[in-house]
Image 1 (cartoon, rainbow, N blue to C red):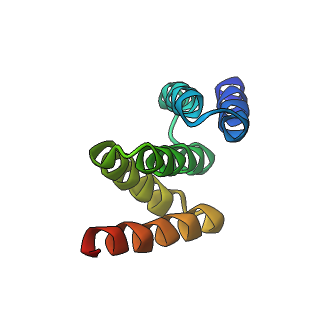
Image 2 (tube, one colour):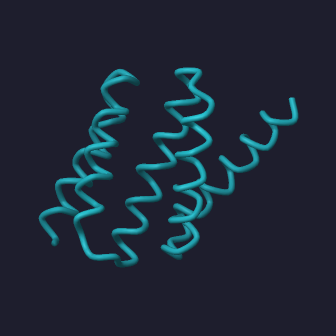
Image 3 (cartoon, rainbow, N blue to C red):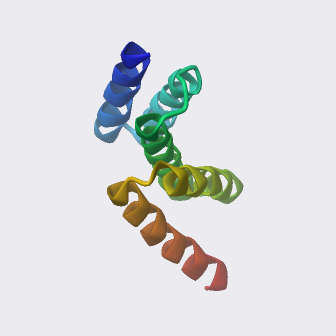
Length: 103
């Protein structure tokens, strides 16, 4: 299981240094690896981070429906992970998404 988490962590980290389209592919691959791992606080935190970053990228690529879907998944995982850093990111994105819907 640790190997899956490590591979996913590398994909999530490296997604920051490539084009948005490549980052989407890398993050989706990370999610697939994480889905194969047993649920845990660490896994849920990584799932949240991957989904929240996917939401940001999809919004950047003007794919609002995908962005909303990934945001909701990420927000849910962030709450269940109980990892403060990820929860803060989820709350920040929540404010941005709410503001975007209203504007």
